[in-house]
Length: 326
Image (cartoon, rainbow, N blue to C red):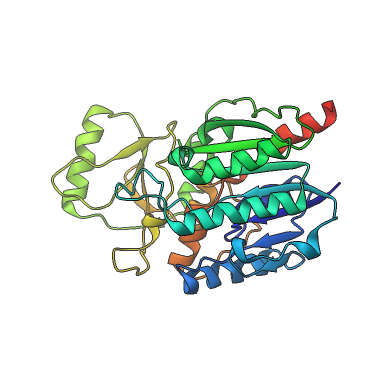
């Protein structure tokens, strides 16, 4: 068994983990009917990075799975849209489209009968009818189900990014979740790149705000600055040994959907520097070989919505350990 399928693949950030583990994705599905133009650009990026993967540009619930039945599927993964369940969306609620997506996932599981099934979502997804549909189908098909909310910072990712994960196995034995590791800081990931970052000119207000922080920590030589804007409050900073703020799509485009030119900054030994889009991808632990699109809002959507590479690598290693114990 070696074939892998990914639903709601986005630009394929999760697939970088599959690739880094020496495997490949055989089938991917990517299409968001609510954001056709953006979804098309994201799928184009997926195709560029994974030319040998069969990419279906259609909603998951519309896929005809009959041609794929009978194949030996080792792994099926699903990362349905989280926009209605994110803590950042206080007015979000489950929609008919979310339920359709869940039914699409159930149809894929039922048709492909993968040996392993994994699902990633925000914490709020666990209180939905969608997850109930999926877990009921898994149970009826004899799958074991293990689930918990994982903090990516304990799996090699320099962010306190919390995500619900399901790991399921067709043979009914619990897969479990990967053991936690030592937390990783933004400085450990980007430290070697700081001196090559682009220099910027802060405003007097920003300088004064940072000086207030430096008064408290006069011997610290570097800070990651979360926001360059200053509205009468202290700047939000992260010390070298802290995790970075969670990377979200909102960092890469403004309220009008236009591209932002800056995301996070670094103060380093008196110099103000800014992170590039590649640096932001590194905070998602994406490998250097991944080709990002030129348009910032598209690249940011891929990065912000992606499952961090190192986090899913940990999930894959847990599946391997389970498979060896069977």
